[in-house]
Length: 300
Image (cartoon, rainbow, N blue to C red; front, side):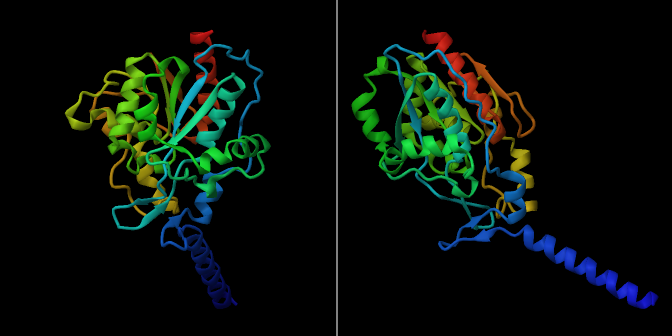
């Protein structure tokens, strides 16, 4: 009897181990890239967001546009050569946009070359009616955005029409955006013309673009909330990333003189001068509220 119990216990342990192992394996997609494991999706995604539908006193002035710089890239290469299936995080993009839209602002959507916006659709909150509604409203622009190069060529003189530049997060914001001179020129344009810059999670990687061609980091000494590199280092354990990233975000910004105010991937948001930042997807609602109220207080 004892022997049978022992064999049965071993079998249960083996089955449990196999189940845990399978649940932590990233899922390979048709193009060879990897999306998060079933365990990572359970831990890290939601069906509905914490979005608060606030009735703001709407902005009525001329600076009603917000330039949104999305990534058009999907696959982020890891140190082990595996590709992470990424893009912009839908909650990090659409929840702040909901708040800003409710506050009376509209959006001009761009990608670096005008290719369609890429979202991490495995993170889309499919039961959130507010998020689904704004996604549907801007779907045509998301699928046929303007190119950032054209925006720079045609629009940088129209500063009186714009209130802010918004760079959503998602690991896709780390693909090409930090090395894009047009991104750097746009952020410097916003900085020099007293526009706000709004970004969160991995989106602050875009701020690195202001240092291209040996330029000084224009956000040196700023307080900012950013996704911690330490958390990215841990996520392969549960199969969120299929390997370790080539380079993180928070330490590079810190090395340039930024003051990172958070240590966790939490709801932290902060405004410092004209820079508004958030720490993670969990900060999306708070970032949207902070951005909407800050712009209204400044512009009304």
